[in-house]
Image (cartoon, rainbow over the protein chains, first blue to last red):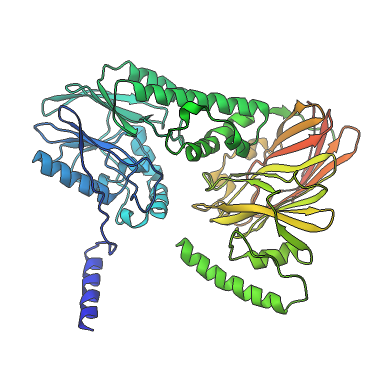
Length: 316
Length: 259
């Protein structure tokens, strides 16, 4: 009885202090070196699940004498807290600022851990987080569960814009693009030649398209390939030297676009797309079937209507 | 959450099953491969009095989970069965379970494509009645974050219908001799009546008629069909197809689609 009373007391204390009762989720984050002073936390090549706590994403940081610059804060408050604690322990100083690359939930829901730090994002990204943050959080709670405990939307500020910025003597180049979403920010660390490409680039993992504009995305990939970088950190998948991941993403998007347009011109129904053959070169990409089905749902409705003709009503 | 809900509904389902045992004699439905809590109620409502078989010959193409709860794509193909008289599509756990009833003639492939609004994770089933009065069932579970049926068309959808109500986009393909694929989109809000203050208003009937006046197929559509319904049909023969539709407010839609 006394033990039960003690537990109840602890529970009510926890509630009073606003702490979730769920056990903390340990993301076991371990940064990997990318270049001179640039780091990445590699996520799994999976869909959101309770087991992975939403850690399906790459985030990273750039060391500077004035503190680290964090690229994306991850899928949950707990992820952001663990990410920040690890970075500050390793660098020995407070994080200087955060850049959020785009308004997808696996990239910004750790922002709460940086409430006392400037969190920079593009204006359209901030507006998107403002408008859709709650719905995105609800869906992540459903898919990920306890690891999301305490996570709420925190709209980034201040606004980011394209151009060079200096943090602790280190020059970063901010590149404003679009295509994966309405606003996608890429960050180049000039000293190391590390390009944090956000979700404009996927490596060995099928790209996702819930808010994509394929034509803009392909144009963005051309711009990224023209940037002099050495190593690319994709939003999902392994870090690769050179433009291999850009080319892989471009190849897939071009095929996807052409395949869907041809299906619409032939009069296929949406579920029939999943039955079409997939070129062998894409078969090793993680989550191919799942993402292809989702992409068809996102992109086909517009294409199939374009393939129809307006019919004048018959006289009645 | 989902587990708890299932447990609760399963209890209700068991109660319904118990009630069913005392009801007039008809063969108990076979065990549901989808293990749906609402299966006994669905079987009694839609299939009572006839033999029921779960049958792989009924192909139902659905996504594992609803990417857009307002428009879940479904394609049903029962052409592996002969002599199909009726295809009835329903979703066990939707607030309105009946989605469509399609009656193809022998000149039409027993297959149909459409989109529907999903409210929560549910089995989606196609029950196909053959000439020997047997129901053949296919389908599967679709996971969903929900909200499809109680979301107002004006708040969530394209709003296209305000300017373009009743307009029809369509096209007739001839993929092979004596084969026609017809795709049709009607601009219509398809309001379910479940969104606050917005009464039910939806397409109810659609007839497909051949150029010579022969009836090809009759389709009844219900509230869960998505806004601006996009329908796919496969027909034998060649040449034009006439479409004759009517909604719940007696608006009539009539077009002729040429190849």
